[in-house]
Each structure stands twice: as C-alpha cells, then as structure tokens.
Amino acid sequence: MSNYHTSVLLQQTIDSLHIQPGKRYIDATLGGGGHTSAIVGLGGIVLGIDMDDDALAEVQSKFKDTDEVTTVKGNFKDIDKLAKENGFTSVSGILFDFGISSHHVDTAERGFSFQEDGPLDMRMDQSLQVTAGDLVNGLTKGELQELFTRWGEEPFAGSIVRGIINARKVKPIETTSELAEIARRSVYGHTKIHPATRIFQALRIAVNDELNSIRDALPKALELLEPKGRMAVISFHSLEDRIVKQQFKQWEEENKGLILTKKPLIADEGEVEMNSRSRSAKLRVFEKL
Image 1: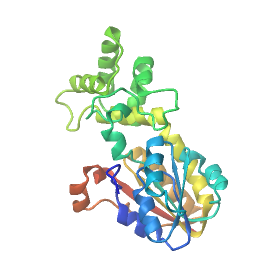
Image 2: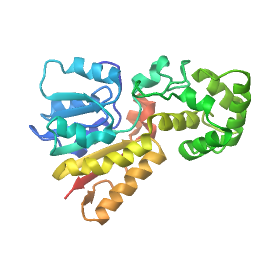
Image 3: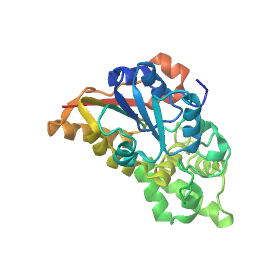
Image 4: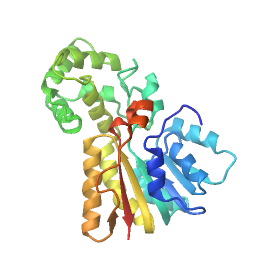
C-alpha cells in the first residue's frame, strides 16, 4: 500500500459490512482504495467509484493484476446508473467515506488545505467549471455570508466576509494562504481552531455540491442492497452526519431496515494518535430488511 491515503475507521467499517467471499460490494468513495483492499482481502468483489482521476489511477495501479476490482469515474450521486452499467445491481454492502483523502490535503496544487500554499481550487472532479477562487472573488457579500454560515457553521462569518471584500477590492484572492491569512486576521484571538477551517469546509461543499450529492445517493444506494445487505457511512462534520442520521431514522420508521449503530462509531485513541484526521470521523451502519 502506498501513502496516498490512510483510511479511517478501517477495521470497524470492514467488520460492520460483514464481508463474505464471492459477494459484491460498492466502494462509492474509492479514494486510495484502503477500504477496497480490505474487502478484496476477505474475498469480496468491488465496484469502486470516484470523481478524481488521481484516485482512480492510484487504485488501478494497485489492482491491475486482479479481476476483483472494477473502477469507474463518476459522482456517487449517480450510484444507481454506475452500478447498473457495471453489473452491480444487487450488492451485499455499500460504503461511503465522505472525507477528503490525505492525498488531496497534502497536494498543494489541489487547493483543499490552508496548511499548504496553492491555488484556490478544491474541485474533486477537475472537469468542473467553478473553483473555490471563483466563489471567493465572485459571490456578493450576502452570498458569502450565507455560504459560510450555512455550510461552514462559522460564527464569525460576518467578520471574515468583510475581510474578504476589503482584500479583493485591492486584488483577487488567488491562493489558499491568502484566504487563510484573511480569515486569521478577521477573527484573531476569538477561536481555538484555525479561523480558516470552517471557511474551507464551506467552499469545498459548495464547489463539489457535496450535501445534495449525499441526499441523492443514499436512497439510490438502499435500492441496490440485497436483503440483509449493509450500508456503512463515514462522515466528518455535523452537516454530513445529520443527513445520514435522519435518513437512517426515516428508513427504520418505514420498516426498510435496522440501524446497527444507535450511536456512531468513532476512532479509538490509538487511531487518533496515528492519524489525527480520524478524530472527527463518525461511522453509521444500516442493514436492509
């Protein structure tokens, strides 16, 4: 395995999917293929979906000598169509991991992280037309404030937006470090986490239409599961987790299946120490009747 991405909650996720040899599974957010590798290692056959060409190339190189993994480029919101096209219309398990990969965070030119200086991009699929820089420089003051408040849950959105508006009057905001510094100056001393954290989250959600994709994908995924099939979903912030929690609850009330995680599973101290990005991960699991 390469250092492309460290999968979070790996053992808990694989255990919860109850992998059986010869059965079919969908990894709807392929990333570096860590979860897929574990499924194949237990005898499963996997359809891996990802929007990102880098991720697909990484996984294809790992599994070039096996028929157990089929990779396809696409958005998981189209999971029904992608599954049908590749012969995965009835599967034993489906995995969603909504976190961005370590590769995305560590690759400066992708623009996902303020820890590295790079262009304000944040597109998972680089054929998308709109970048984070387009939003930062093009949205109105009101639109930016709504974006940061709704999808970043940022309490100091007003101050940060004022900083952005003032800065872009002088010149366009082009890099991650420029935006991070504006956020830092705007709320200096008022927050324990880096002031850019929620701003970057909001921009990434908007650029990739992430929350709507989740809402679209979950019901389609349920239809693909065979009876007793399981869906495992890893989320990394409250907006994602709330959608999953509410959807699972609705399905259970409609007698479509059972929630297997009354409380979400989280990383233990050892995993958090090894991979700090696992700290915010939550795993929920649903079994179809």
